Image (cartoon, rainbow, N blue to C red; front, side, top):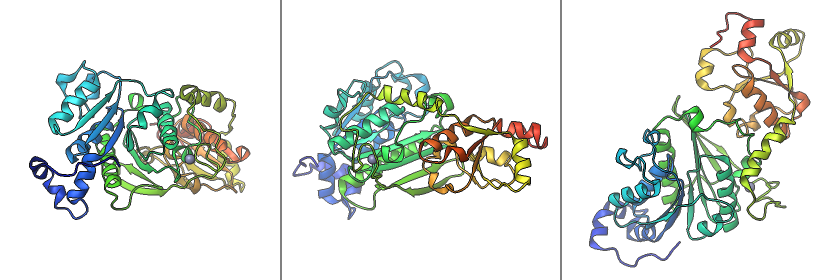
Length: 386
Ligand code: ZN
């Protein structure tokens, strides 16, 4: 970490007294925090609580990358900005509000869109990076740049009622180990399209800040090699193990990504590949008649837990939100046919396509055509067409 100040001032001793009396922090830990440099990508939902808590904790230098202007629709969750900030650049608003929380903080503003030509240079100035990116292109860019610069990446994402957080340490796995390629554009909706519960970024961003401070203090057990999954609707927290993938194009044994690429093109390219990938379909009527004559495929529901409570098809083996399917792919059998369903067949088709791209046999993957709605028409009219 960066050089720490040798002596705390009397004001600092008072301000950080609740830290200093902690055995795992103490005066030395607090000086480490004051000497640390953290970069936050995005002054939005995740970046807001991260920035505020890191400033309050005395993290000495906080860099922020953003180029947006505060809009009224941001205020439902982006606690770094106030109503009076509407129309201002987010960076100005972020700096003023961080300084009002803690004037000790050195706030460094990077008013740019993070891109391949500037990402490594900016990231290289910091000890670690907190990801608050809201799109896949930036997520892959930050992942690759952090790995190539050897910087820890505290990652987080949110959508609707779901959140995820993890810590990628260079050489111990990365985002590409988990998701070798981006989903086709449109397959995973954005928060602007699908919404997000206002306090969810508070929850995940605060976890990111906690992991950051633990990393600086070198205490506890981090989220490295684990992905924390948060389901705020059922208020369930669990972790799944993450492993470095030896075949990872970035951090694997024979990497093919050795410098930053064009991430917009990389993410757009996924759509062409996905549409070239045809998925087998089966109608609910055919599914039932074949199952009655002895076929026993694995039946996978890829809807949300809220939808599951409305209705579940008989014989469902597993429900996993389509957004988490690649994380949960190890729960699926590779030696059986798999039939995937959702409400009307769109998400399940995308899941079948995604599974075939990560190595499941496409001849054994079936999309239940028309989903629950077609089931209601063809098999059982008591099933609600919600
Ligand atoms: Zn990797």
